[in-house]
Image 1 (cartoon, rainbow, N blue to C red):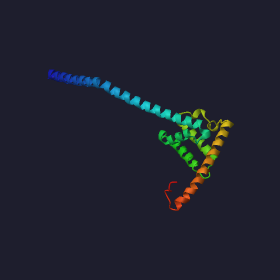
Image 2 (image 1 turned 30 degrees about the vertical axis):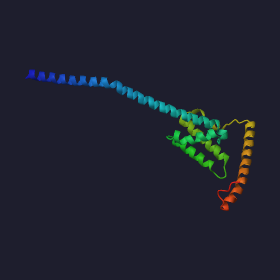
Image 3 (image 1 turned 180 degrees about the horizontal axis):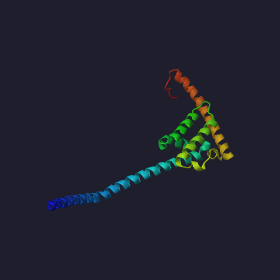
Image 4 (image 1 turned 90 degrees about the vertical axis):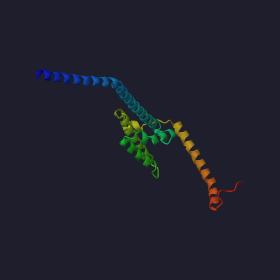
Length: 187
């Protein structure tokens, strides 16, 4: 009986050894494929995170550069990307929402816009990891030479004059439209 038990034990050990060998063969065969898939997934995630961080820094840089002229085309583009690029950051999106509301106040209050813009910049700087070295006055400090101020003032006056001119010319067209002659007859 001891010999039979020894034979059965040897057989069980041989079966377990065969199973272990088969598992080792399967693991050896599948390991490189699994490792390659894992490495590709990690690379893709890292690339996506890097690209998102790059977009965040680009938005922050644009807003910092244009904070003296927050109505510039570049600023508007950057502001309109915030909801997508910072979709996981509640603080940034709330600060953007408050600034958005300030843009639509009547009458427009520039000091409120400036304060809320600084709050947005602070939230973004925290999100991208720059908050340690930036203070509120750093975010509000803007250098804009007087010549740029004067050029902007001239452009604003020209734009207002053109707008008044267009509105005056459209006032005549509006009276024609009210008389039921729309579209107006060609000259």
